[in-house]
Length: 307
Length: 328
Image (tube, rainbow over all chains, first blue to last red; front, side, top):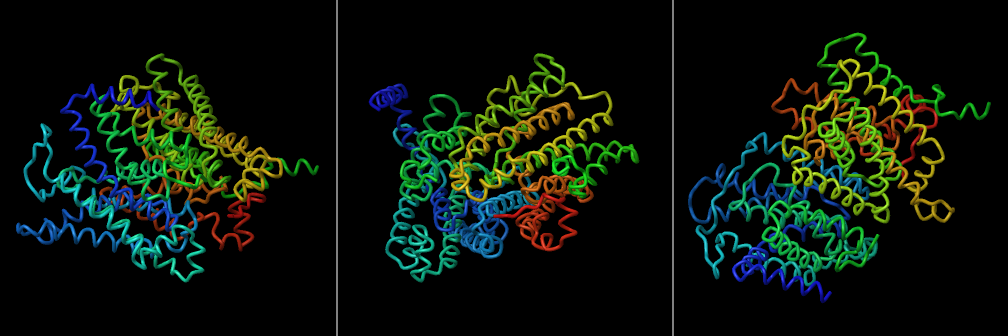
């Protein structure tokens, strides 16, 4: 451990001051984005037992629907329009996810293979529809705040900074919702023990429905927020899905705290790799994390179940 | 005599549907020499090999392998690289890569053995993803985005190519049926029903799971290597997640744990996919939409519908005499 720390300090030293800030700021931004994506994925897994392979699709739909509402439905240049289209996008994705759960998944929710294959088929279907409607070249949405900021020598696009306060609001907000409200407590209860919650009079089906909406809403929010600074393309569902996998496994499936810690760890690790070794390897990190954590410590950093 | 009845190659016990599909596939070039159709059937037969070899692990143990492209694309790339850099003959390339795929099946099986359910699926998915990324990083050996082209073809003519692939499909089909009906297949079914109970009856479940994984990888490796030589090139699509997903969908819609189900599913759905080319612009959307509808209608696959189970003659026709499958 000590040696690791030494090696780590050495790399940090090699990076130089400017790069250090780069890693810190960009890593934090990435971490907040990942935590928004991954927390919903972990939530729906622990509540419904659904390994939602369409989670990345909800993220993609968040971005696409923002584009659709902004350019095709509302098409006015007023300041509030973009925020309004983001809100509408998140709300409609949440409604859509509830519909998907109610119509397609509810019937066979206890079959893991069925839910996995169904959500994956849905992901492919939606991605094909989007490439049919808008082409593969990508669509763009304007930023909420234009321009960029220079923080101790690091150039940061302003829009990306919005992710920080939003994550800082949403994550504690979610925690308060889960611990203090009746609905949140039911969600917590079902995720701890499904049968036990059922016996205590919790409507498991309603809880799963709400959780589907909530988790896909969070993914859609991440997608809507990232739309202005990344290309909105039909393949954009795959990368957040793999990140969500890696984070969920690293944090321990079913542990929300663990997944938030893992999100930031992954964010920093990726930025470090892209600075130290090569940009190409950043995508590999999440895959390697999945394999190594599963083989050597399947419970993850905060998990308690290993099966 | 009693022993003779249990012979796996006793044709009267086989599924008539499976035999009919294989015979029809083999007889097709006798009636039509249209190379386009032969080409379509060739790809369909290769997908049938993939779906069937996927089924021997996943259908019989219910541990979903979501990274099947690892074997297919890995063997395809290895065969392609051996052929174009060392100019080995296709036969040697294919056997070496199939062996390598089988061995990596043992290795991955051994590493991921403890994992169950979603964890196993994610691990296999990650293995395939890593190989996909490596194909781009080591672009000197893999040709990067474009892949390797100009590989030696299998045989001089497309018709003999087709018959070679057909023969592999037939051998794979009977091999897997034989395996599934043997002690090994029954043990896999026992593991599917309850692994702990199987273990406490003195069965080394780990061994049988790794064995099924290796067999599945070996056959997929043959299929993948043959695929790359039949197309005379190998590209990243053979390693992509789309291929893994397609194999899962084909086998699942056909009916997991039956071998004949994935065969029928792969052949019919591949032909359906080609038939949809009349509406090329909407083809993939319609195709994936139809797949969703099929899975919704028959979550266990068409061979395992309750309706089939209740109708004795239909069950006999689809699954053969002993091939019944009780989903747990």
